[in-house]
Image 1 (tube, rainbow, N blue to C red):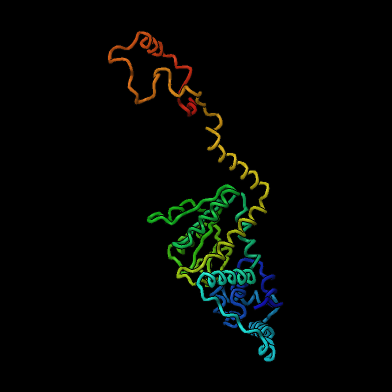
Image 2 (cartoon, rainbow, N blue to C red; image 1 turned 120 degrees about the horizontal axis):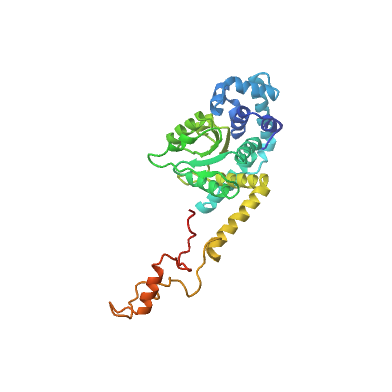
Amino acid sequence: MAATALFDRIRSEARSTAERKVASVLLEGYPTRALATVDVLAKQASVSAPTVLRFLAKIGFSRFADFQAAAIADVERQLGSPLNNIHAEAPTEPPAHVYQRTLLMQAEALQVAAAQAMPAEFDAIVDLLVSPRATIKLLGGRYSQNLAQRLATQLSQLRPGVLFTPLALGFTYDTLVDAGPQDVFVIFDYRRYQNELLTFARGARQSGARLCLFTDIWRSPIAEYADAVLTSPDASPSPFGSRVVATAQIEAIVAAVSQRCRDWSRDRLARIEELRSLGATGPLPGSPTKTPGKSFSKSSSKPPGRASSEPPGKASSESLGKASSKSTGKASSKSSSTFPAKES
């Protein structure tokens, strides 16, 4: 359904965390969710019923019934007259092959996500991710932790203090021992939602940490504790659902963070490239280098493992003299070690 004046008003007027939650739920299922009761809408948005009514009053509706009437009028305008419906183009049959059908489903899901997007909710997540004092910790469920790892890998190249936190058996909640207001947890949770992620999110919230949630349009229960939520349509013939929209959301987040921290990120990426080049050019700066042809210390003129030409017990007086000169306590002027000496 195309965006209408009411749709745009809902999207543009949401400011606070609670208002954005209400607006997101309405836009994800507009206009159907507008026809539900206040209590149902509040439950879907993880807010109270008075919060829903206050937001609707803010956008110009003193009564919930007035808002529903406006939503119904939107539907009627979109449907058009019976004559228009008669001449409407018949829907196109989907391709028979699963490959083509899947690609078109993903393309449609991306279009739907873009049409229903809440830029304010997206910006709230970016604001948390670019905070210089924050430590960003990312985790996901069985089939979504790869998304968390991807975002962590890319963010860590743009800013410091980014950690991927896998759900390890027996160690899931250990991360919370150090959690506090300086932490931002980014959690990926899609149906079927995992109880351990919900418990983790609740504990993180109790520690004072901030939460960002990536989930589907049915909204994980973690949304109740999240400061900002990005949802994605889940249209796919696969039994595991689709994460194409979620991947696109990650790309958008990375693009926004890099734009907001352009100078900082550019310097960091340049340093990363410099460090990566060390593997191809030689040892770390400041490390002693080996002289070609002098890989072994003076006390051993032959590589290890190679038999000496001298018979046992017949070492030359010259070699014995060299050995005795080393026993005087003087260190050899050349060393085969490539590691810098420890500081005393």
